Each structure stands twice: as structure tokens, then as C-alpha cells.
Image (tube, rainbow, N blue to C red; front, side):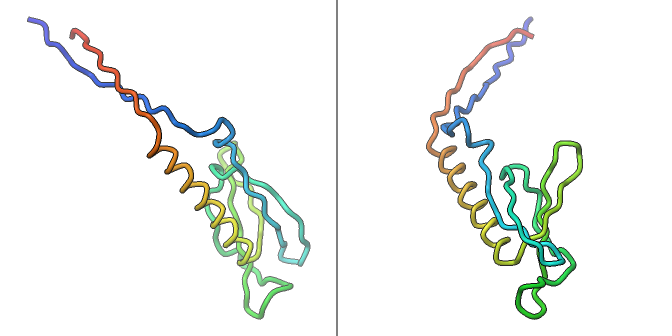
Length: 119
């Protein structure tokens, strides 16, 4: 006697634009010695933002810089420093991206395909 295994394959059709997986944020960098610049990072590659361990040379008294860790594809992270205010902006941009992505998933069409296999 053959057992019939009924499997259900869910294919989620994401209604995200093609560029969404490479959505980038741009931010101003500030080094511990006061040098400034800017950088961009793909949102999906940002691992975390944490204290950098040095004071903000141009900021308020006792204001520490933050560091952002960005996956670089080799199993390690690139680290950049930024002000607390700029880190809040990056986090806000990331939250907006994640909200848009969640809305796209919730409003997407779901295709369900049933396939019967003999075992």
C-alpha cells in the first residue's frame, strides 16, 4: 500500500520593487578626532549600532559617538562612527524601510500550490 504524502508549497510573491533589497541609507560620519564625512550602507547589511567608546569632539559634554557595524561580505564587519543624533536618523530610516517592507508583505498576493507525491 502506498502512502500518499500531501505537501503544500507556499510561494510568496513579494510585491517589493526590484531595488528594495539594495535599499541604502546615507549618513554623516564623525571620527573620534573630529573628522567628518559621509557613507552609505545597504539596510539589510547593517548589523547594529552601539557605543563607540570615544567622546564626540564637536558635541555636548559627555556625548559619546556611536559606531555602526556593517556586514562586508567576508564574514566580518566594517565599522564607522557617527554622532548620537545621526544614529537616530539611521535607525529611523531603517524603521521606515522595515515598515514599508512589512506592508508590502501583508498586501501581497499569496499563491498556494498543492502537489501530491507518492512515497
